[in-house]
Image (tube, rainbow, N blue to C red):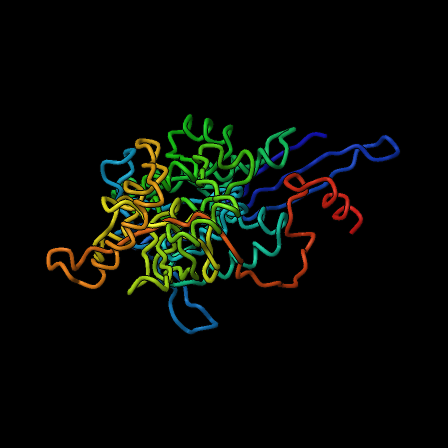
Length: 412
């Protein structure tokens, strides 16, 4: 197969004519001609850019002039990885693996989705494509689709013998390179997010700011909160630290502890405002026992019937805004790698319970605000419900599923 490319100047850009010669079945040559139209008047959609002012047009569906979407004061990570004020550009693998995070209100505003990424997502998962299109219509998130394959300055012709994946990656990198150059006078940079190692190396060679999803999220002010939202598929989140939970007590120890008063049974309620905070109503205590942190919740879900133990008084908390501060929670959480767990006897736990009753009752003035905390040490009954659904074959990547499911997808 051979390729010949010609360019023809138009009033609004270029017309790229690509002639492809392929071998026919009878051994002859077959010429295929494709013409690709490029434009100069596609705006970047940044409110800080004065180069694209004349490129916004009258929208026939609304009767209004289109406006730039990306903020002129995006998130500023000054002093972190030399990023400063920036927009985020997504690669295909990030969209496919982290669509839930992209839809979250806690992260990702002022986002650029190259047209190349949109088309790749559509071909690989139509379900995620529909979610991405819906996300692009969310005015608060400020997500724009940039038609890089029709913009004269961001288009690249496919090279001879280049596979489609490499070509798409090159288009995405060139799109990031275009934005970097286009916005250099505005003080706003563009960060390309991708977990493709080869793509990262080539982007850095082109002086494009590029990061993995995990590295970028780690720089954000609410990074700890976002850790649980990161995708965990093999090879995609290899840098994530494995979370280790304390083992549940044996059934005999649970029953014995409840009987002798060193452990307590109750239903856990997880806060709707902070997923790392819960409370357990214990019949022998005047007020609910506070459960703080991932390790102390110990895999318990809202409504579960659990067994808890009261933590040492040094780990009791005051009901303030510090409770929802994950840094504070993790620093005081049981199971921290930097401190050993304190071993407490059953007798000492019974004394702790008496102290908790005294504190919750407000008998001592200076301790009125102290809240006893606990840890889940066993699950007696889950509050899970049964749900019925179906798995759409085109929403699953066969390379990431087991053999049994892969065979089913092939049969379908």
